[in-house]
Image (cartoon, rainbow, N blue to C red; front, side):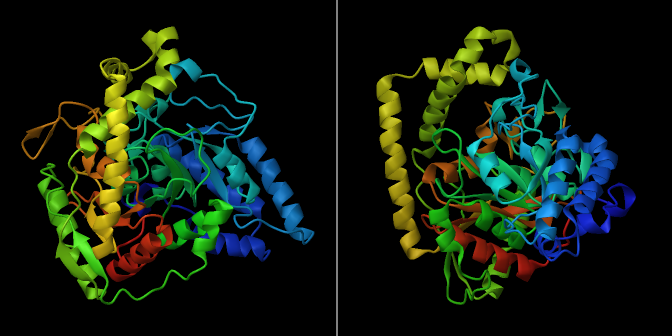
Length: 459
């Protein structure tokens, strides 16, 4: 991405979230001027990438003015006071159009906020709009029939990934300092990898979430691990915040890390493999003991598919029955797959899920972290719904190509995507770091150390 060529973010938009929040709290920067800088930047840049699909400038300006009044009056301020943000279009937002990327809801304006939106607002952040997502968040390529496709800012002919693609692109283009997303199979990690930002899949229950679909969590995205940690410390559930009292800086000398091998014969693009494996020396330079080893993923694929299909049918089955012509084919396929399942299939998958989580916990008694690729491919053509082949292996369905992420979802451990390099075409590639059960802060600590050791150019 040639930033000087077309993104040209103003100085305010180039600030880190940590710096921006500090200056607003100190009265050296107003929430209003911060918002206005971002709105102007969005107006100029967003038409090229289609990341922010709804903008509520009037509401946001009013909220920013109120935030400045609170600051001037010396009132208590939330951790994210005055920071502009936009919510993934799967998050119901009171008084703001929320489409879920679906033609069924193209004119829907909810009268309530989702739990995550309520939490973010309670910290003092300013909502300026909504970010794009695939239809009902299904798929790791951000396009829908309501708003169209979101483009990768590093190459406008490529996909940004998904399903939190709008948020990832908005961050990469400096249109937002922080963004939220969801992650069932890959949706916080894959777009972060494709766009050169940081996406974190937290432990279940760490961040307020809507519903209880298996594997699904909600979480933060940012341009750096420090910004992401700052954001997470503000929006995490109160009982989880206690774990975030440690500093990010920490020594990893002598820390034992498991390095991926083949993920149970999962195909990975040669360039992704090359760029990921080149980072082994970075972890070794941090003092880590790196060994080739990986959990037993036997049963992870069938478990994910069974519980995903069942959950999709429960969530979307009524919409499909009422509006079959307004639902994309891949969702119809998932509903059909669920109809082929028996109660025994679902029960057995639920048991396997628990067994796989236990296996992962046992594996991570010897190793503190597991490192592997985020995505099995590099960003592909915007016009391609999903990769149909990886390294000579045919992909039969639209979820086959994200096993490197959804295997980790099944295991129930926190995982982060951190930028680790670029392809020969100049496209970002992320590395995935997985931590122990509920050790969210530990994952952020090693991700921060890796980020500092690698020192890639920031978007």
